[in-house]
Every structure is written in structure tokens, then in C-alpha cells.
Length: 317
Image 1 (cartoon, rainbow, N blue to C red):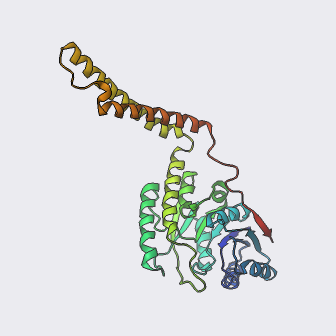
Image 2 (image 1 turned 135 degrees about the horizontal axis):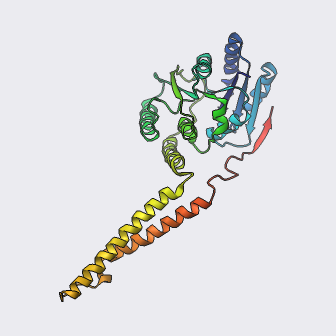
Image 3 (image 1 turned 90 degrees about the horizontal axis):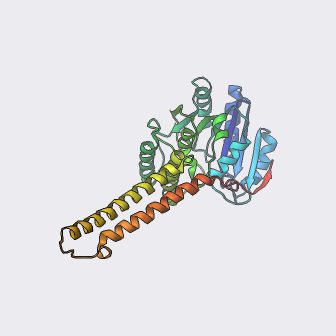
């Protein structure tokens, strides 16, 4: 199979018929063999009923319905697991992404041998309250990840080699940083393509201001896991050793100073335990020891919970 189109959706009943017709038209004109995986993330507007109805018209549809809302990352992860195409295309269901971009995205994966091609909505139809924070997050992500050629990490329209989506895990709010996750997994040929951003035709955005806070926290999580997941002792052990050494040096300084005063018969103004430096040294030694133990324990405990991506799927078609 040439292409799997993975579409997470939440309350997009109005846009689905038009979107599926558009995708089918593009695939037919290009002669692609394909499937469309629709992951209903707990919709309550009749989206699942629309999917069941469209299945009769478009047999290439695979529908997956969550019992409740888990989030876009969960929907993408389940869609990736179900995909069978050589190239996997992700797009949103709100018609802001154009299926006409699919052939070029597919070509760049197949002919130019990219691992991942991310869309860049250079001209956006969003309010400033959304575009300004998005630019800030993209700037921070570029600096922290080292992927300097991407301008829009959060664009829903992306293309992947099948091997990429089968090798990564997406959870929490990490769908925004899939290129970063892919890079940490060893897929470094990442490209960008300017794509059309269409104005929303139906409904309203499903993301509030909290996505920026959650997104930033997930970026820190990805950065830490990518750097130290296989060697947590390098992080905790280094921090612990530095803290322990600093505390020990301060303690030795206080003791040597005390002994010097005694040997020179100089009156010592304060006892060791009365000095603030003594308590600073004590805290540094204890914290350093605890950090070192944390790193040691982290080396023994797997970071992956078997329940992390366990979702209640109510129906499939």
C-alpha cells in the first residue's frame, strides 16, 4: 500500500464528508493505493455515525473510536499502530489542511528519501493570540532540539516513512514535537514543505491556552528523555557529584580554618555549628548524596510504563 492517511478528530461531523471526498479524489487522480484511518477521540456530535455511514461509500476507511477523549497524541499513536502504508500522512479533520498537498509530500519521502517532511503554514489564518505564542514555541523548540530548518513543529500536515511512525511513541501533548522525537530515535533526515493553511470552515478550535503550558513542559520532558533516558546516572550523578563535592569542600574549609586558628592561638569568634556555611555544606552534601542515589535507582528502573498507551477503544470498522 502506498499511503496511509491518519486523521485524529474531535467533533468534526460537518467536515468529514467533504474531507473524505477530497482525499478520495486526490488519491484516484494520482493512482495511489491508500487507506484513511479516522481516530474519533471521544466526539459527542455524531462524528462516529458519520464515519460509519461514509464507510459504505469509501471502503478504504478504517475507523477507530475512543470511549472518551484522550487527546490528539493518543489518537495519532493508535493511528500509527494501525497504519499499513509505506508513507504515512497525518492531517487535521477541520479542512484547514489541504489534501492536494499529499502527492508532493509523498514524492519527497519516496524520491528525496526524507524520513519526515513537516508542513509549514507560512501564511496563517489564525488570530495573533495563537500565532505569537506559536512562533515563540517554535523558536524555543528549534534552539533546544537543534532542528533549525523547521519553522512550524505543530503543523498537523506531515509525511513519514512507515519505519518512523512504527519506531516512536507519542503520548501526553507530544504530538507537537514529533520531529524532535523522531530525531532522538535516530531519524535525522527531516525536511519542510510550505503548505496552504485554509480558514476554518466548520466548528471551532479544540485547543485552549493550556496547550502552550503543557507543550512547554512536554518539550522539557522530551529533551530530558532524549538526552538521558538510557543514561540517567549521567544527569543525576553529575548533579549529585557536583553538589556533594561543593559541600565537602566548604566543610573542609571550615575545619581547616578552625584548626588554623587553634594552632596559631587565635581566638575563634564562632563555633563551626554556629556558622551559616556549615549548614550550606551539610545541605549540599545531603542533596548530592540523594541525587546520586536517584541516578542509581533510575538506572535500574525502566522509564516505560506498559500502561502508558493503553486506551479503551469502543468500536472499530
